[in-house]
Length: 282
Image (cartoon, rainbow, N blue to C red; front, side, top):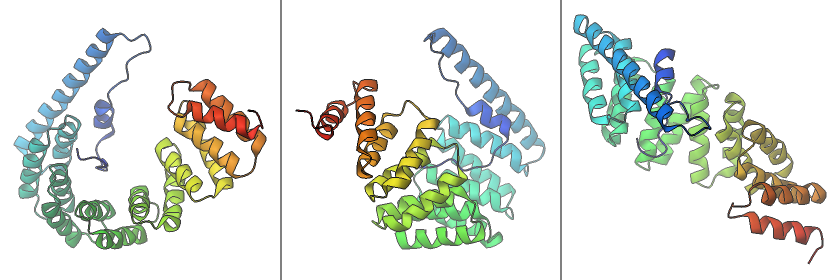
């Protein structure tokens, strides 16, 4: 899948669980990992087989196409995903979700111009289809047509202010365009809408530090650290925010904790130097 693509398709929870590869245990058992991977593949194969049987009986079953597409996406079989999505559209020419799925498959295959046509058809049928509009904006972003992408994201947020992915993409785009103060509001909204997303809280905290908004950055990064205590990035940014806010004693402690806790990090020596300088030590 192209870098930065987000998997926004709605699929049954069972498929989501099957697509989530279990992490290896801390004992490092490669045999356990292989067994889990084999079990996952068998479960996916079972889902695909059942869905194909259902489609053979009734070619208009959108949910069954979606199950197969989810597995193909998880396996990165994008050419097969595209062919199946094309069949789904042929069998469901009046269903906006079919055109959305086709456009999403086209994006997976790096075909943004074709995807724009598919998403536009979905929106012609259902103008308030927010997910299609957000992914349409992604296609325009891939083509570097940023003003058009931004207009579609604005429309998506107007239709549904609580659609997190719209805020995520708008924040990313505005940051790319150097409109960072505007991006802050979308990062703030995305973080609140995705309270368990460490990535969003870290991105938000990083931008706040860059914009010298240290007080909010401190609380944002502290929350990010509670979500992922082992993130060296979150800890280092937190130390920077404390220093920027003039909370020197806490900053010194944060920098010292950083280099002691992450001695192999490329910033460890820099953190130790900064802590010494702030403490007035040679």
